[in-house]
Image (cartoon, rainbow, N blue to C red; front, side):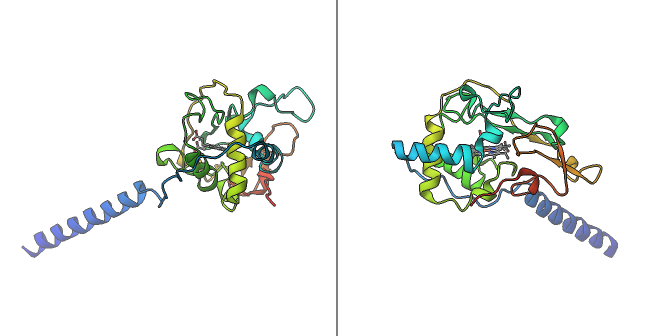
Length: 214
Ligand code: HEC
């Protein structure tokens, strides 16, 4: 009798613990809805946004097409913001894709509201509440002033819409710690795109990315 009761209690405890763990696994972090703002595209904003996008925040480094055959890998103007699939040889934990962020409505972010784009840049939340893989360096961008983020959005909205369908990012969690204890990052030094050795996971702000803001 007591054995039976103890067994049932143990089962209930296990079931509750299982539900708790399951909840922790699938729950999403707290997120605010996107702001309803519509960013006015003034020439001043677009110019400041171009400077931030290309020079300071290096959106180009991940999201734009580069001419690998030329010294310094200059950005190909017609492929600015069209997206990039990071090669597996870089030690990515799955397929990591910097999406097409041109205003193409189907394959880019042309159908996004400005508030959704701002939330993706500063908070790392994609459309529909998807949590972005932190290679998108939103932790570095979270302190951007409203005016600077508006400038980046105005500039992004002004890009040439490029039709470029890409797969989504899919992360294989089991690969994250790195099998050989080392993790490769993406060099952003303007040198050839070849893996470099780093210590630590290549998330925003890691030295592998050489991403420094202000
Ligand atoms: C170090 C590489 C890197 C840099 C620099 C970077 N991004 Fe990203 N970005 C990514 C990756 C990778 C993703 C996709 C993450 C995912 O799918 O989970 C992403 C996602 C996004 C998204 C969401 C798009 C979508 O379809 O879900 C937007 C918008 C975006 N980035 C804009 C920008 C802007 C604007 C900048 C510059 C201010 C920038 N990114 C800089 C790598 C980068």
